[in-house]
Structure formats: structure tokens, C-alpha cells
Image 1: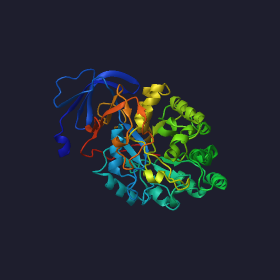
Image 2: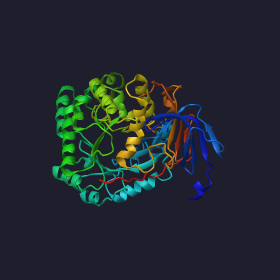
Image 3: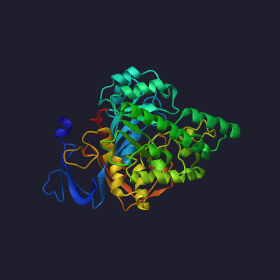
Image 4: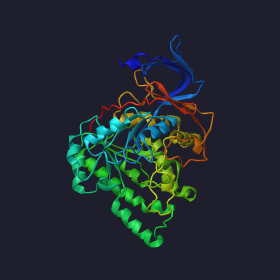
Amino acid sequence: MSARTAVEKPVLITNARIVNEGREFHGDVLIRNGRIDKIAPRISGAPGVVIDAQGKLLIPGMIDDQVHFREPGLTHKGNIASETSAAVAGGITSVMEMPNTNPTTTTRERLEDKYALAAGKARTNYAFYFGAANDNAEEIAALPPGVACAIKIFMGASTGNMLVDDPKTLDRIFSSAQIPVVTHCEDTPTIKRNEEAERARWGDAIPAYMHPRIRSEEACWLSTRLAVGLAKRHGTSLHVLHLTTARELEFFTPGPVLGKQITVEACVHHLFFDESDYAALGTLIKCNPAIKTAADRRALVAAVMADRIDVIATDHAPHTAEEKANPSYFKAPSGLPLVQHALPALFELVRRGELDLHTLVRKTSHAVAQRFGVVDRGYIREGYWADLTLIDTDTPTRVDRRGLYYKCGWSPFEGHTFPIRIDTTWVNGDIAYRNGAVGAKPLGRRLNFALKR
């Protein structure tokens, strides 16, 4: 036991409305040394700090399996400290960060460098993906289980050498990976043809609403078909990221995430926005793959409810306001900041009747832990780390730029009022965020994994 944990006082959360593993019940949670020591209808006589939840909703903290925090190399957009601050303000307690930084996370040495960067900075728990490239197949084959959360393959346009579209390279990665493979699925030749057609019509002034025509349904479908086919051929554990179309759902089967070889994720913005929102938000919601039709959005939400889509994430990807405001379609970058309001947006879908509360908790915590083999997190269970989020379901949140923790300083939800408020976030048993303020010290730890290929 470390000196830090040896002197920690127990924390007792009383009078909570606990939602966990398909149950909702009123009870108390006792935390000792960062872990959940006891869960009971009433716990009395425990020494230490007592926090009265006053009937608020207590859920496992969200585990976000897809974020871009921009460190190293792109820290004018965001960094580990700023973006994990925004994450805990949004009730997210663990993140898995992507490899397309500068330099890219495509060697084992760079992967360990990123872990060293995060230590002492991250307010959430953290893990990093190992990036596939056209020339690092040997590094991938040598990567042991438990070091990275998964291998990330950009099968659509990406930065520099991280676009992997050579059939032989893809085949080798899928056949040799010792840990799960996750894919960004968009077919680059299809995208390029669509870009040229629209450039001939519009020049550089392509309107934002054409983005889902360029990053089209066909581009997504072709690439997802390829990834699923490779996984089936080689028996690879595959997780397809940020699905955007109803058509792609044909590749995935409903059912519990445990036991699935091939799983799929939906992101908050694809469940919340549709193409009608480009009129008001323009390039602020330009992202890859693109936000598509209202029918696609409804199909994705239905697939979440039907357990065809396994997890919900953010794909948080901040750019500066100046970058996003570039009038050239080709120069305005894709991606948007989301971690601070992902859970509030999902609770709005619950309030609308599109999702239910138990599905929300399962897709943002339980199923993510199951899919990636995250050790001792993702549930409110005795013995597990106390990564918890307290939700005030009676107090709305109006999104205001002055309350944002993102380094980029803007949100696509500005001016929107969500039906709930994040009251308190605990990371490893300590308060990381409470009543509008992020805690003074970073509390995040490196995630551990117990899932092989």
C-alpha cells in the first residue's frame, strides 16, 4: 500500500439512487483506499467523510473508448490536462486515447513515452492505442497484451503514414495482432472521387452540408465490409469505431458484448445530430465519418437499444475555433470537442424516450469494460475502483463558453440546455469534480487490461 492510500480517509456516499447492472435501488456506498468497500441499503458507523447524495443518481463513471487529446505535438488544440479536466466535468472517469498525435504512436517506445506524459497530468484514468502504419507490422506483431488497449487502423483518410489501405499490410496486421484491432472505416478512393466531383461544382467553397455526401454511405459500407471480412478470415477480435449509417448495421449481430468476436461503437454526436444541423452549425459539426441523415440517426439509436451496437463513445477531437471557421471546406478540420457534455446529451435522449437509463449505463461503462477487458472498473461493485458519477436529474445545464474546460474553448452545444447536471465525479475514490469545479490534483491511473486477441 502506498503512502498516499495509507492515509486516505474512508468516504461514505449516502442516500444515493444507484443504477448499476440493470438494477435501480436506493443505498449507500463506502469507499476505502480508492475502492468500493461496501454497498448496502444503509451503512452506519463508518468513519471518515460522509457525502449525502440527497437522492441523486449514482452511476459508474463513463469509460470513453475513443478520444483525441492532442498531446504530444498538437497541444495548441488540447492537452492531457485540459481535456481530462473537461472529461471529469462531464462524468467521464476513464479514457482511451488515439495514436494520431505528433509523433504518431506507432512504436513501443513512443507508446511508453505517452504513458509517461500522462502520469501526473491526467484527471481521468487512461490508456493509449497503438497505431498501425504502412511500415510497422513488426512492431505490431511484437506488441504484448496489456500494454495498449488495442491496435488502431485508419482504413480511411488520415494523416501521413497512418492511412493503411494496402491489402497485404492489412492482412498481416489482422493475422498477427495479439490484442484487439479497432478500425476507422471509410474507403479513400470513394471519398476522393466524391471530393473531385464536388470540387468541380463548388470549388473550395463546398458547403458543410455536402460533407455526408463526400464521406458517403458507400464509402463507409465498403470499408466496414472489408474490415469485417478480414476479421472473420483471421479470427481477429475487431471493434469498429463510430458507425454512422443504417446500411452498415447488416455486418453486426445483436446480443451481449461478451462472447462477440466483432463489436461496434456509436458516438454521441451521431446519436444526437443529423444532417439538418449543418444549417445552423456548419463546419462545427464536420467530423469523420460524417454526421448523416435523420433516418441513419434513428437507426443507430434503435441499434443501441437492440444491442446490435455495443458501446457509446465520443471521438472527442478538439480544434481551435479559428481552425474550424476556415471558409474552405478542405481546410476546415474534422472533429469536435465532446467529453464535457457527452453524458448530458445521452440523458437528453433518455428524457426524449429514445434511450433508457439502464442501456445508457451499460453502453457507456459496463460494455466498454467487458469489450476491452478493463480490470476492476466499469461497475459499482465491491472491490472495484470507485470511479463514480453523481447526476442531478432535477437541475438543467445550459452550455456556456465560460464554463468549458476544453483548451479549444468552444462546444457544438453552446446555448443548448440539457436536462441534467453533473454533480460529482469520483476517480479512484477521490473527488475529481464537484459542483462546477475540477479538483486541484490529477487522480488518473493507467488502466489495466485482461483481454487478449
